[in-house]
Amino acid sequence: MFSLSTMAGGVLSTDVNGNPVLGIQLGVPISKGFAFNDVNILGLTVFPAYNIGIFAPGRGSVTPANFASLGLGANLAISPNLHVLADSNLGLTGVGGVLTQSNLGLRFAFSPVFMTDVFFGFNQSDNLGLRRIPASIGLSAHLVF
Image (cartoon, rainbow, N blue to C red):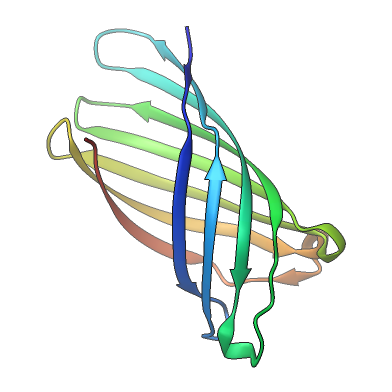
């Protein structure tokens, strides 16, 4: 009927000023798939998560920024190896306001256990859109085991 799992992951990236950002995300992805035929399958996911200890050492002091987030995603298989991806994430940062990010992308499966994604991020804003953050381009790889 649907899939329920847990996820824990680490993030190491840089913010718009080039400062390193380190954090941990704990979440519970809830997924449901709808099969139109043997190939075309639509997967929908709701992903509530909690982000712990994200901080930027480059700012001179460690600044914790724990917050809850809610992600929504869709994955449409247009062939056995090629999928179209769309997702949006809403981070509730408390007094800092709201942080949003949306992505559109493609996933190519080289095998059932190894796939890669390329995506374009847009509509990123914080504090309800008062400050725009530049768009992003991403590339990722997944190994299922």
